[in-house]
Amino acid sequence: MANIEQLRELEKWWSPSEAGRALETSGQWVTHLARTGQIRGVKTSLGWLVDPEDVKKVAAERKRRKRAEQRREQRKQLQLA
Image 1 (cartoon, rainbow, N blue to C red):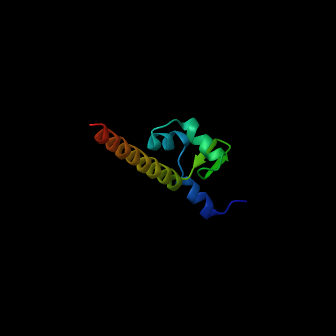
Image 2: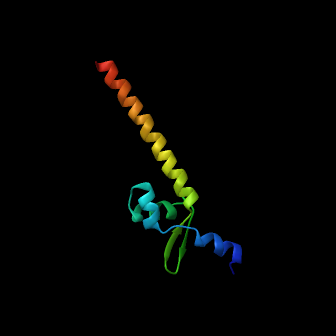
Image 3: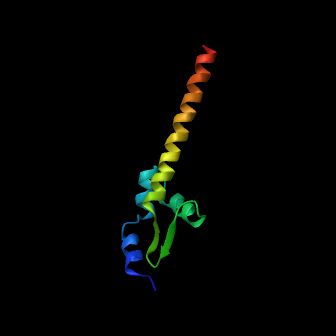
């Protein structure tokens, strides 16, 4: 049986749709991330809930990778000029 602290924590968790908006992706993809253990998630009787802290980490990593890719592309363009 879940204790009160665990239930209170889950109240703060996001639906896959909410997380998808934060990640600029679909709720289905977020559910996939939870099912495969890439982010913390639990399946409830009403559907999935995901840990917003994990979602924020994934969003930050995506942003970091995007910036790195943009820098590589800029260097490549400068070399061609």
